[in-house]
Length: 247
Image (cartoon, rainbow, N blue to C red):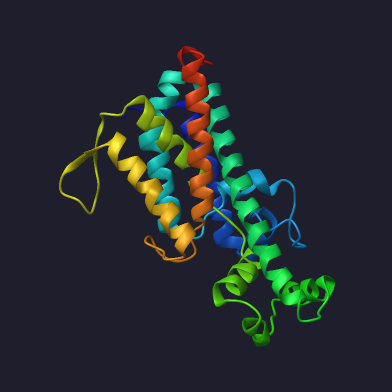
């Protein structure tokens, strides 16, 4: 890919600095900068951006930063720095929006099921805000409903993955015949085939709860980033806006 482009370089630096700070300050960083559910007392409006620079471990940041460099570099060269940054953060915000919207659905579904037992909403929120729950709740709704409710409230989202899924979509639409070499497959796969399959796997995991990639993954954030990336690329190409650079 050659030397680092300006936007990619600065995004890498900021992500690495956040990761180093997280290894030093730990829970305090997650409390301040992860994306919490809006009804959680840890939520702050800045988290819709700051969560894009937080990561849950070395492999998490390593994979995300590699993808940012590999797929983002050709896009920045084509679009220019400012346009790439606009696209990147728009996809990340879209990921946060979809992720939070799905969490609102899970939260309200769980609340409605528990309220039917005679407990008020404020009492339920007081209980879960202390990291607690009642085993009796599992008698009021399916296990997945209660699990999703508790996770929506108590589990923050971290990572650049949502924004990077938007970048993946843009790369696939811009360079559809580029051949990608995947670690676990010995043959190259064209971007126009690999990227849709990757998104479909996330959608399957998000809808069914059967995680293909492992636990603790915000599948709907990935889908949100991909969706917003697709919408922007579709609109730009339709209006020939994609040909303009923002340096």
